[in-house]
Image (cartoon, rainbow, N blue to C red; front, side, top):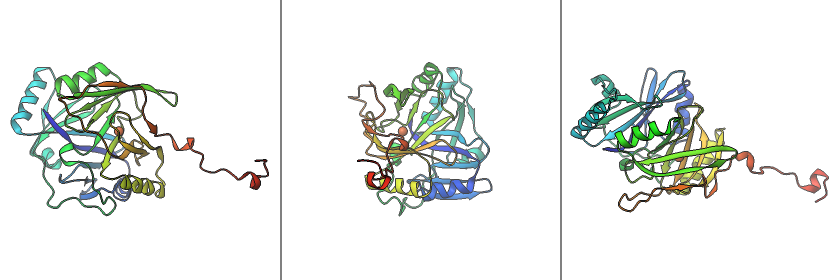
Length: 303
Ligand SMILES: [Fe+2]
């Protein structure tokens, strides 16, 4: 019943730093500003990110796009029938999200979940000199996100049984001493629009932006490094969505993933599996790489 990940809302403590990060590192476009916030886009939607000032430095809301009003009403009826507290947003709230109609509820972790139809479209195609290949978005949604969720069964029930997400796969393993158990869900052909698992420092572990060329991933890594952004995981490829990507910290502390080459899911033949590793190669923290080693003759050591 859900078509795609429509938008993300972030609450950030430093709007100015966030704006220069979003435009100068991520390559997103500011589409409007107001007192206490701004909106960004990465494709033909009028806006894909709503960034407002506040102390939490975390995810404020997830917007899920439904294809039409009848489907949205049917989904809301199903949610209310299952005992969910669903509120219809005011016209002003819908206008701020640049959508026609909007309903609000909360997922089992307390994450504000917004269901809408009728997003405004941008007047001009998205183009950025920083991302010549462009973003993989539009029908696939803005990207994906991975959220904190401590109650696996309640979270699975909410997203799969009530909202209609479909299981892509799961990764269960250990990563540098930390237990990993992440469940990946899709709503369209993008391998996952949402993944959840474990207790994270923030509601949002990371959001993904996918570009259409590896060169644009490398250029983003250069921009992040040049801007002093803290890299969390260097380039690598995931076994499940096949994305080649890197991870780094946003000014709010939660991370972003920047990648290319994500695989598509065909529900007619897709078989969910469990993977036993996070990455086929790479994705190591940068401190695991030897970045500087004195030549033996320079240090006086024997070779
Ligand atoms: Fe990701």
